[in-house]
Image (tube, rainbow, N blue to C red; front, side):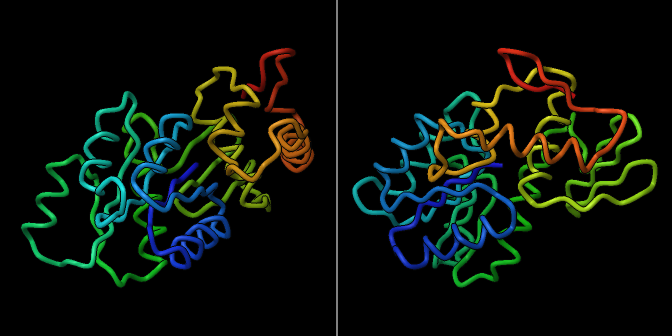
Length: 216
C-alpha cells in the first residue's frame, strides 16, 4: 500500500511517514498543497493523509481535486478542529475519513488499513489455494501453518493476491509498495519475490511471466 502524507509541519510529516514505513507501508511526503497535487498526478496513491490547513494550495481544494481522480485515492483529513460542521465540510469535499489533532498514531494506521479494505470484492482475509492471507492482522498461513514474512514481503504477497490472477508488473509493485526513495532500476522486486517463494514453499504459487511481471 502506498500512502502520501501531506502536512506542512515538517517534523510531524516525517514522523508520520516513518511510522507508516515501520508499519509496512510505502510512504511519501508533501509539505504543501501544490506538492501534494504534483505527487498525486504522477503516483497512484492508495491513501492520502491530508492536513486541511496547508500553504500554497489549501487542503480543501486539494481534497476536492483528489476526489475527482479516477480512480480516486482514499483521503483521511487531519485538522485541529473538532467542530461537527468542519467534519461535514470535509466529507462533502470528498474525504473518506476525518481525524482530529492530536491523535494516536495507532489510530491513524488502523484507519488507513480500514480504508484500504473498503473495496467490497477484496475482504480482509483472502484465500488462495491453501494460503490464508489476513490483511487486517498481517499474517499468512499455508495449510494451517503460519509463515513469518517481513512487512514488505507481506505487502507484495497481498498485492499479488488481490490481483485475482492478473499479471502485476514490477513497476506496479514499486509504485504501490515502495516509496520514492527506492531506486526504480534496482532488482528489489525480484529479490523480494524470490524470498517470498522460498518462504511459501512448494508448490510455487507466484509465477514469473517473462517480460510482464508476476502472477498468483
